[in-house]
Image (cartoon, rainbow, N blue to C red):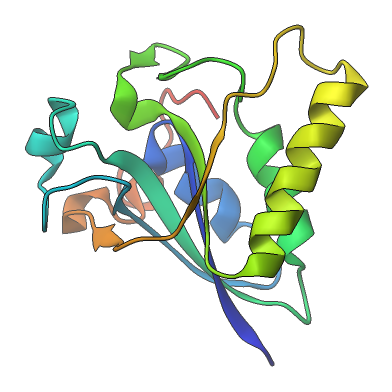
Length: 158
């Protein structure tokens, strides 16, 4: 087994986490915050839009069972990457689309997929997903972890 880490933001993290957890080869998926400037932000602080963070999911996976490229495909399948700071009814910079890469191969793969999507015409607007180096991942409060497992289904853009 070769354990790797990937980090994605595709709007509300509850559904994103649940979708990644369903995938064979995904060992763990954790809801949290990335891309901001405040240490150890709370959900309430992130919701103001003042911390710069986005709701993100950190995925631990076995790359012998699922590839990073497959995770990226799933990421783009679960949200609309052409809406800036918005997914479904959720809006604000904390809902932006982002890929936080952990190594150069992930950086290259993410950029290539965005170019392919833009060239394909799948979306009527260009992809606005940020592609940035991974920074500190701040785990969200416990009530956000495995939210749908604890609370049942609900409304989510995913």
